[in-house]
Image 1 (cartoon, rainbow, N blue to C red):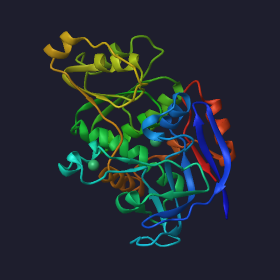
Image 2 (cartoon, helix red, strand yellow; image 1 turned 45 degrees about the vertical axis):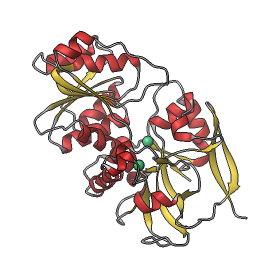
Image 3 (spheres, protein in one colour; image 1 turned 60 degrees about the horizontal axis):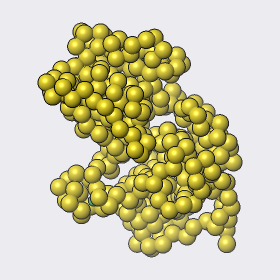
Image 4 (tube, rainbow, N blue to C red; image 1 turned 180 degrees about the vertical axis):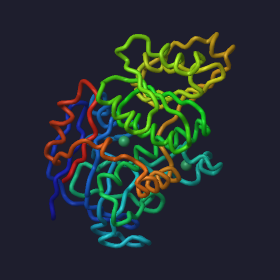
Length: 343
Ligand SMILES: [Zn+2]
Ligand SMILES: [Zn+2]
C-alpha cells in the first residue's frame, strides 16, 4: 500500500509526523494531493489546549486550510476530475436539520468538520465534495486559495453584523484574522480602526486598508478607540483575540446602540463580566459569530480570484511538512505568523 507523510494530533502539545497509508476514495469522496496548507490561529489554539469540537476522536488528522490537485475520485463523484485544481472547505452543513431547513446553515446542528491538511494527501468527505469543494482558476496559487477558509469566516462575521458603507468598525486584535476582517469590512465600504499588539502587525493592518491603528502598549486602548470615533465609540466592534480581557475591552469600545461581534473563541470555562447596566441602558448588541457556510466560502474565493486580498501581507513564510511540529512548538506561547506548509 502506498504510504504518505501526515501530521497527527495526539494530545495538546503532542503532534507527530507519521507515515500512514494513502487513503482510497470511497463513494462520493475525492483524494486531494495537497498543494499548500496554511497554519492558523485556531490550529495553534488546538495545539495548546485541544479542541474537542474540531478534532473529535484522537489521534486526529490536523490542519484545515488547504488547496491542491484532485489525485483520485470515488464512485459517483460529479463535476471533479483527476488533475483539477481545487480548494476544499473544512466543513459542510447537513442541509436538513432544523436550522439548515430555515436557511441558517451557519447554525447547522450536524455540521461536518474536517481536518487533515498537514499531509501529502487529504481524503475529502462526500458531503464536502458535494457542498463545499471549489475549482480554482489557473492563476490562483494554492497558498493564496487556501486563504478562502479564514476569509470566509471574516465575511460571515461582517455579514452577520450587517455592516453598512460609511460605518466605523473597530477590530480588536492584529493577527491574520484581523487583517482578513479588515478586507471584509473594506469590501463593504466601512472605515476600519485596528487595535492590537506588535508594531509590525499594526503596520500590516494599515497596509491592508485600516484607516488607523492603535497599539495595546500605548495605554488605554478602549478610550483611544472611543476618542477616534467622536468620543462615542465604534458603530461595530470585532473582537478577534479570544480572551476574557479583550472581550470586555471590545464592549467598552462600542458606542451607544453599538454592536459587538464576539469572533475570537475563548477557552472552555471562560466567563466574562459585562457591565449589565450599560448593556441595557445603552442598548448594546452583543453577538457571537463562529465559522462560515458554503455561501461565504464561495464569496471568499471570488475575492481572492479578483486579486482583492493582499495575500503577501497574510502569508509570511513557507515551511515543509516535517517542520510543522517544531513550528507549533516554537509559537506555543504567543501568536504565530501564518505559514504555508508545502508538502
Ligand atoms: Zn483556520
Ligand atoms: Zn444542518
